Length: 253
Image (cartoon, rainbow, N blue to C red):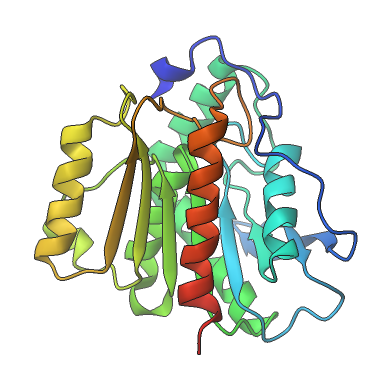
């Protein structure tokens, strides 16, 4: 995955937009691990954020930067409480080399990342009294969105994966209970189409609710909030499908 970002940098992409002024946001502490506070960015549709459908928002390999905060704001403008988690402990990458190092560090200690995501989920359920909870992530965050669906099982209500690292292990995927929406690019050299097809087939075999979209001509990170790989047409269509998916599974009674 790292090689497809070679020479890239975290400039705002076309996914970053201004949102409704009614959205409220703040930094919150959603947990503590080994004596260190876990902080994230909480965006809400208004001052009262209780009993609303909610989302865990997982950053790209750049980290929790302003572009990811913008995506949380956009989701809040759609009526969700959006908690953008931080798997890098407060640091943000400015170069692809820095991002590679930070991503690798998380990969070497996945239990810490899982605990982080568990704390974030508990925060939404216990503090915000979330009615339902979904997860969305891009690239590095897309892989962790799938990991979150495995971790939380039937406690999670929806999962959106933007070209994240795929898992094909049947035993692990059997733990997924949330409906899954997968967004992928046909020209993504980091996530081969054969793996995408195998992922969909495995979930189908396990009788899971899965919908996969593969965009012709789209490369890796085509809908990322940060970076220079943005492709407007497939990115906008994927975002519309993402909102429709969350509307169906998080807002319906």
